[in-house]
Image: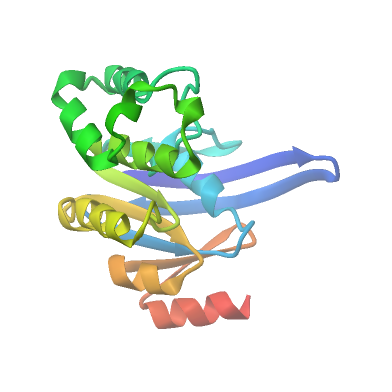
Length: 215
């Protein structure tokens, strides 16, 4: 279970303090698929970062009683001077995974070939994204965080990503944030709209999207 209790997140800007999340409360149980709709700048990515532990709330608490992924396919934390393999080894060490058991999987899935052993700073954006998704799947979690739907590579590779996440791991909890109701409807069973720092939950995607469009 993940329990978000009375969470407030504020940022200091040149124009003063801005409240991005205002007294957020949300509970996600094992295996639940939660979709969160919101406009750009509504705080969706901030909420994902808080749930992952990458940032801390100003007030309130987030209790995690199941393992939680980082935002999928996020490669911003890669060390560019290290090779793809060295980044994999570093992440496996952090999460207590035996790297030797995941090398073949990451190499096959990412389709990087010999470039897995080249510095990440030499990668194209697509190569970095493929490596990030492959490493994301190399470490197993109880709950996966999805900041927008996975759109890595060409259609064939995207289908492979979809199968790996939504089919092979369909028993895991997922929290997906997006501004696309189609993806939320396809993969989620709970529907939430984030607007002006407030979460509003709905019983169906049609009502949620109507509220989302009005705001």
